[in-house]
Image 1: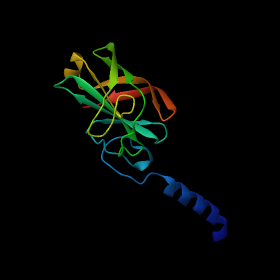
Image 2: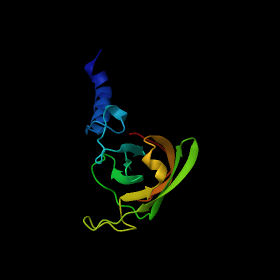
Image 3: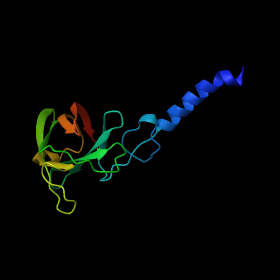
Image 4: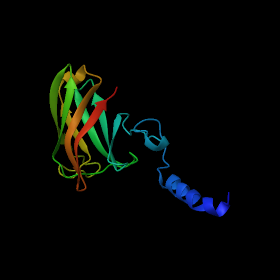
Length: 154
């Protein structure tokens, strides 16, 4: 075969390969042969095509669920205007809605209406280590993600 005939295919393959994410980690989503590490040791949920991540962190002792909004590599916090995020969990065979309130953080300058952190408390979170659920909607920089399937892992 003639090398010049293969050149366009080789260039196209190389461009696709180089356009992919080059970050690596040990947990999180695993598309494209890589993964990202959740900064708080939680469960990462990818939003969009590598656009953003949600990190779900359960504090069993406090019965609290925290959701952080992160960038596509789970390295930087992404502040959003929402005052709350609704999660509908399925735990113990029951539908359990949680309304996670925006959290202000004076150390980072985050405020309600301009934050990356959301929290809710419920007694059942103390004893339920894993559960599936749905984030009903989250608006991140003008893109609304609806009915996002989640699965909290230990």
